[in-house]
Amino acid sequence: MKKIVLIAIAIIAVLTSCNDYETYGDKKEKERNAISKFVSDNNIIVIDEDQFLLKGATTDTTRNEFVKLNKSGVYMQIVREGCGEKLKDGETANICCRFKEFSIEADTITLYNNSDILSATVDVMRVTNTSGTFSGSFTKGIMISAYSSASVPAGWLVPLAYIKIGRPKSLTDEKAKVRLIVPHSQGHTIAAQDVLPYYYEITYEKEA
Image 1 (cartoon, one colour):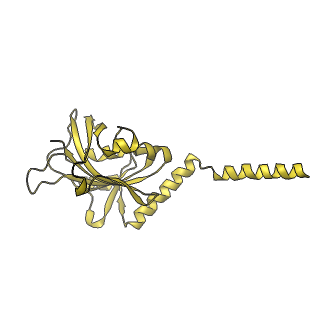
Image 2: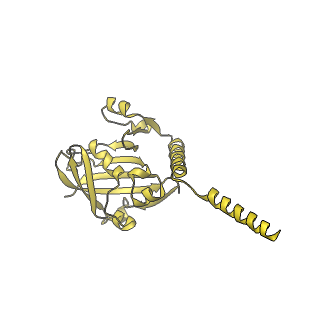
Image 3: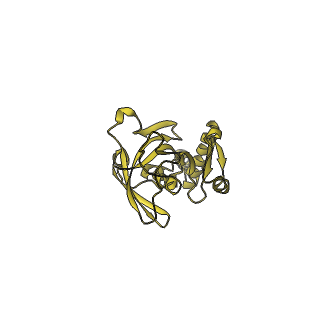
């Protein structure tokens, strides 16, 4: 009888551990739900890529529009297109970024360098445009130290097809600024590893 009880306990323990295990599919579903909730809670209006292009590759910030881009799955709002020019085909440039990173599932700011107090801190990524495909790596900044990787999250590179990266030279010039919802597949090492979505506000300008 004691042996039967022990076997039953062992079976329950195995079943419980199986129930506690999250598959990759479970994590992706959790991520989709978290993004949907974030979109709803923040009154975001999502437009598709066709609508976005028909509007001249712009998003209406007064309506809090974000475009969901087909290839990457990134949600993007262009707050400011920026000044100067876009990164040309075949061109490589150092781009300075100030940003705020927000974990959508944890509902908290996880990293930032967009405070005036941190005026000496800026993340710099060296980016190349190869026939419309952007690749890059960080050369300095807090992203490298936070995630132990110089790889630029693919989601950070998505806006470069649509924004200008010049440096402001007059009072009317403005840095490019975007807001992004980045799924794990387009995120940094921790996002990819743990299947976590992040929200970003980022400015871009060429290094002096």
